[in-house]
Length: 360
Image 1 (cartoon, rainbow, N blue to C red):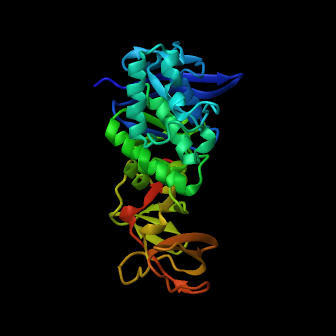
Image 2: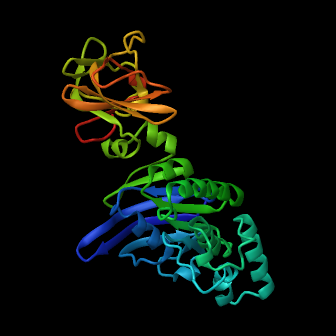
Image 3: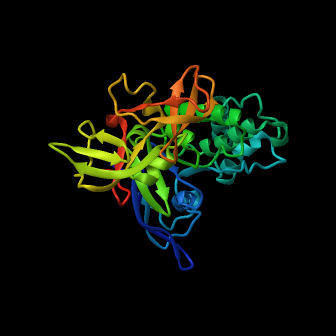
């Protein structure tokens, strides 16, 4: 199947610094791909290169089977939504939506039909005669999204479109974007530094660091089986717990040992052969069981330092061997700072990383 967007051996250099080096990625038709990573990782640079807003040093960008590496943005068959609304303040919503189509010389009847369809889709039909100053932040961002949708192209690019909104509006518009993709079925590439947006919106996530894709997989795969220590620590709130130790070979099986903690690894699914030596054990707060001893699991004894109630659940921080670990519990928690606890670890849900940081 032909890719909707394909980046081949892309290289982008600023001065003497390579922001992206030899990157290749294929995005399938109708896919929702999220580019996720910390500031400066190259995700917006990659998006701008696909859009034609960023010159590339080497490599190629293909959209819908065409090499568009040196084409102007308007000729690439894309719609783009930016972090800032970038609306014309003196124009009504109707004119903001139709401006690009009028410049392109489309017939008046076609313009009116597209604006009407888009306004209905985004629930803007009652706001068409208002100016941007008369709209809320969420309504302005919907107009910005609508301005891309009226182009009726196959590929849409989103550059952190929700980052200027408050938390409630972000949640509402995130759901609207998800519904929009389900209804339209267009290919969407979405840049964010917010892992919640990535996990809830994406069909696949490309996690980037220093211009390199660290892992490209479904949200579930990335959450359950992170490819390396960076991905494991970047995804999840609170972050994954890490304990450094050694893998040792016993009679017929391997164990992970760190101080008094010994974990039998027979229930762990290795991605690659695990030799004896330094390793890091990672486990998410929700993968600890409060009463580990009665569950027959290896326990990590410690004392509660902080309890963070979060409504439907709570995060309990506890001290073990001079480091702070976290445990997520559902419902009301009858624990106080100073209380002893010994949560159990299910090794089948944990992650092991070798000395080089890659998943074992």
